[in-house]
Image 1 (tube, one colour):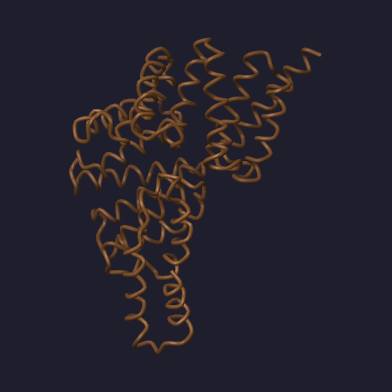
Image 2: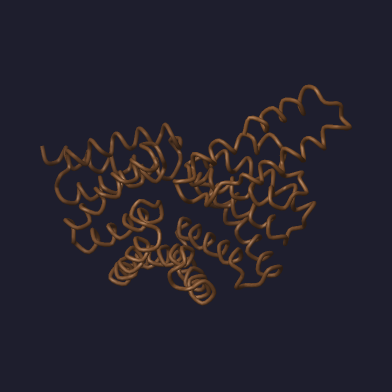
Length: 338
């Protein structure tokens, strides 16, 4: 990768304008050749971390190289998976704005940039802007690529998650159910995207008060995730935590606690202490500890998590507000019991 860094320096500081584009295209082609693997797999994150600064430097939004543009879409997704939604939003917004003009609003890579941007907005708690983008991009994808296209389904799936976060759970369930049924038909029941959809359909069922159905679907999905992606994959761990919430709601506190302890430990190891998903896991475990009557443990964990969440996400992020509310509830319980 040294030659890429050298090319960037030459482009910026030394080459006359007539030669800059030639060298820039060479750097872009070299980057695309070394595109890392699946941005959702932590095993490839070290390679992505090395590549992303170089990718930023070669203006992929202005490139005519299809493979480099594809890499840019994956980089936007990697940044979200790594817990850097703000950086992804800035990068993906630039790609989306430029490609709408040069590639058109229904081009697959324009829509992939929209998918990245919408999810980055969602991860930052900007659900209203995310909803508008999801709705627009899903319509463009279904019109341009077809309603069964995997990218159109990813946008529909993401839109359903966002509707749940807006509290529009009946709409979220209906949209996710449609996405799941199409995924199952197009990609099969064990494909990771089908499992993503099943996971969030179960979340929607829980929100609608259909707790046993949610638990059963989460049980099946979690087992399949472990078979397909392994115990340490972020999506497996998300599924484990969601299943634990169902179990806690249904009164199976011991199994919920065991699942959450393991999920939190694995998330700390694979994602880091300050990753948003690790913080979500810790808050969920604190809730279970409080429900079990272990409120002092819950208080200590929730306070540390609240403080980390404010540092990482800001005091007004929905996850920070949730952690703060939980901490207040635990404090009140401890005060009344003393």
